[in-house]
Image 1 (cartoon, one colour):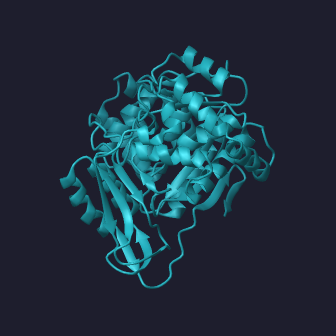
Image 2 (spheres, one colour):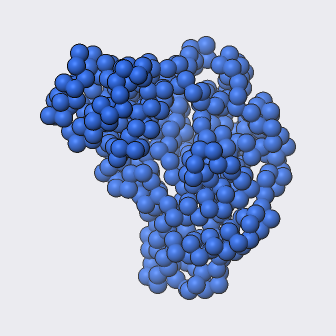
Image 3 (cartoon, one colour):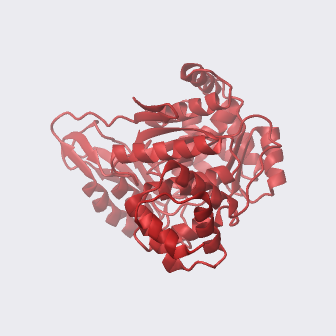
Length: 441
């Protein structure tokens, strides 16, 4: 099989066979196909796309390139959740114990963050001693005993995806829908889930800036799941402003604890209930979103979700006392309030710019090797559509460097627009994408 002929075939807009895709991915991982040829193929895909069958074949080849986690020893239907990323995206910290408390086993493989704030593991490491390094056997045992475990992703999971992404990153082929969809879904499938719930963000703080783009990506991933035998649904949710009010690792943990108590921000609570309800339905624990949400609301009201979170933190070596005393989590020496420069309504928030403000304070990483300051970040006092008076606090910056805080203050103000005219906040949940199609919400 000639690699150059496969590249030419895709360049001309023709579908590749399963065997041709296998030849490309296996050959690249094993070093038989050089970077420049796979780069040429990726550029051909960027311009001519891939069919649903091709994308599913690519996904499976990336899954087969490395380790696959066997969760068959865990009782019940295992439902995974994935977000395409955003600012203040605290959903996993709330969803995992909430869904587990509703009787759905949550076996989550997570990673560290690169960007605005840390990933799920970074956030959980705000609890002193929290450890995600465990054997698969211990991981499975904890899920069966407790209903919830979070383990760090191993380097052996989908190595083909890691190599291909690094290549795409330097060849301007990252934003290709088939390549994005196969990258995300390969990791979810390799992680052993029976069903998958996706949260695809759209807006100025998301990778997919336009709603139709986000829907296209969601449809591609749902179709992959369907072809590979994993029930998959996707929400399209707004990221034209940060989700919730906290941006930063320990700050987001505190907000997650508040949400599990029933005192969290309305938007974070609403999205978690919507995502969680689909997880409960896919696990066969409820028939309708209303019934599923009632189970989740009951788990918040009776304290079982918070109690499960407490037990989960303790089981993985973390100081669970911080669940009841969140002020004992890492903090910051400097608290700088950002005052509104005028009266009016918060009209727009540049979520990406606000995320970069948090990263500048030390909450995130620019490069993989960067360290994270768990105590720093931003807490928003005002969001889009809310009234503000001149001098009133828009946000509080948490920092351990006074000079950085002052620098970020001006940058934050540039990310906010205040107008006199009333403004409607953006719709939080835009659509639900299933095998049956797109339901606008």
